Structure formats: structure tokens, C-alpha cells
Length: 114
Image (cartoon, rainbow, N blue to C red; front, side):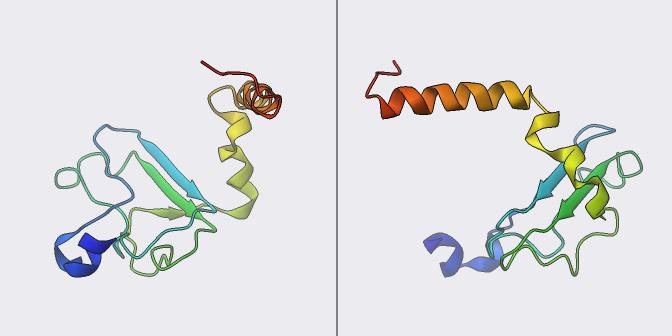
């Protein structure tokens, strides 16, 4: 944060930008520091992919989590749709939890993970 605090105008942090059509990025219940730009999202080139993307936010907090001033092509995820974006629905979420639990058990038992 030292570099940011020294020259905040030159450090531009965005939540994402669409480099392919039909991209989807969602942030749910995330802390966002002051480094996140007010507009939140950055276009790739002109209006490329803006009509096919879904960039959404729900329940984010912190100085960068304020959605006032976000670009017009971003969305606020409706509460009734938030569960669609849970870990359980992506990358074998329940299986990852089992693996994570097994690793934690090994750690607690003092077994190596190498």
C-alpha cells in the first residue's frame, strides 16, 4: 500500500476487463480496498464484448466496494441469484471442500503434505 499511498493517481486497479466475448466475472461478499477504481471495470478496446459479458457484484464492502460510479455495463447480482455463484457450483466445489478438510486434518495430526 505504500506505493499506492505515495502516488494514488498513477495506480489504477480494476476488477477486470473483457478480453473475450461472453466473459463472466462476479465478486460476492469481498472486501475491496481503496485501490479499486470507482468505475470498477475497464473495457478492453472500445465496446468490444460489452454486449455479451456479465460483470457483477453483490455485497462487497470496503472503500472500493461502493458501486456508485461503476461503469454502466456492470451489474448488481440480485440476492435471489447469488447462490448460483457459490463454490459448490464451480470447479467441483464439494470435492474441493473434502480435499481441503483432508489437508487440514493432516496438518492438525502433524503429517507432512509434501
